Length: 242
Image (tube, rainbow, N blue to C red; front, side, top):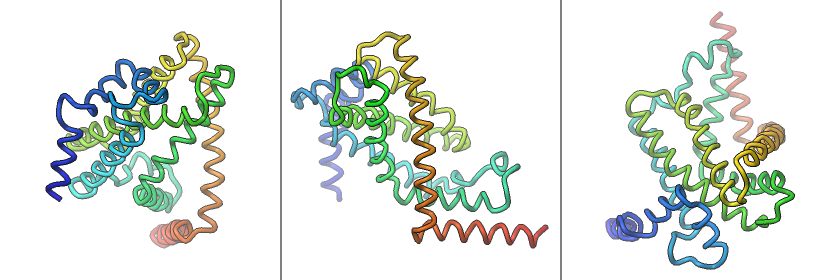
């Protein structure tokens, strides 16, 4: 274990190495990192899969810290359950538990979804094919995940509500995506604003579709049935209480 940590520190945590160089350039010139990888120049920066793997590690570490040092962070606040139906908070807790359990799979599923959305929104600009868009979002989603993992732990540690953290950091994620895609597609500010609106419309459509898929999954999977039963039990308990 010690040798593994030393190897990780040697490869990724030295100041003057590819990891920090990749992080910095993804903020200043994301197109340089992404296009150099797509075009076969892969010595200057961390490769796309390796970078995303590091991001998964940061996200896993974030969950470990929150679960072990701030276990109440995942409690649903009163302002979110004040007007909800009895038992809905139990369903939300069950959903959160499933999301944590399959966190890595959920994060990986974002990549092809974002790539598909970009393919639809930028349909008339033939700059990147679908495979290249996967690379785009491996880097950009990885960059966002690394920084949001750090920011989330810091804000939770000083007492900020997890749900407030999630809502307030979302604009940062959207702005970074827009910034990176603007530079990658070489379009104007007005152009990326219009495309972002299209991105939002496609995103809403996909959310509806995924909601339907999730509802079907709940009906036919063991975990889904557990969530449904937990909600039913909570509703019955609430009826008895009142």
